[in-house]
Length: 337
Image 1: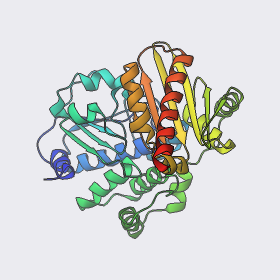
Image 2: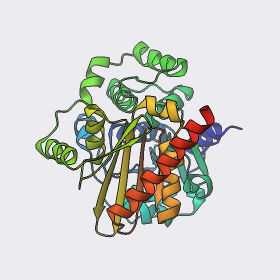
Image 3: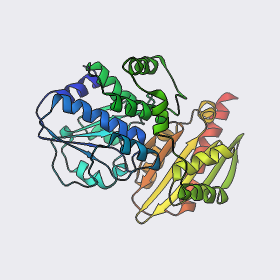
Image 4: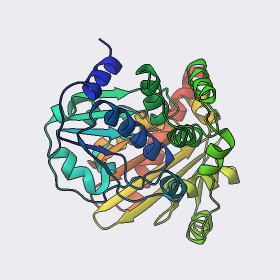
């Protein structure tokens, strides 16, 4: 039996009085739409169960989706659940205010559906981890399960699911036959592509614009071989700020932020950098740094994050990060010679 089959059995069989669905803090459209998709599955097979969607903060890009689907959710909970489904994340520190709630449950009650690099948490601390990094989004994985179960979402959920896939795939920047087949099924039952696109389009608000500009003004440029690596710091909107630096011409953008008892590092990189160096930022950088600084790190090859539950000086983490990247780039260059 495959991991996916085990997950489907867990979601559709058995008896649960209470179920929770939770994603990462400051949920994005992928986390939201995959949560709604899982709720749809669970309500079909467990109509008498109490199902809570738990959300710790909403990103600007997910606001329209939440308003459109108009599904109630909880921002706090101290309940004990018979099943907790974790979507679009497999790093405990990224669960925000729900971290302790999740960790207080026995592993047999926890399952993960995610498309980021596997972590020790997903490998050892849950009963089932359906984690496939090659997928464009968690929503793609959830949508596939919906169709495997011969369920037919209504148009509202269908639009929401497609919107989540569009968002995390960067408008199908990465595409394969399986995803094409899935999208084809959505079209056949009436998805509105143009609406799904508009659902996660939102102009930058002033705070995001200010953060992006401040981040650009604080950058430090490092040239390693033929690559331009930039480092900057900002208090919020790290992901958006990193993408802005790529638009300016950086090959890799590393963004440091520090809060009380927490240090964060976000990275965005061009796909050509990953192809040229074979550096996977989730696995080769953030995971390694997480071991060095006792934090949680992971993500994709070109988009990843590190969360450290303590305050680390910027100079210390910058030195460690850039040294690690430089070492890997030079090792790759030596192999080519």
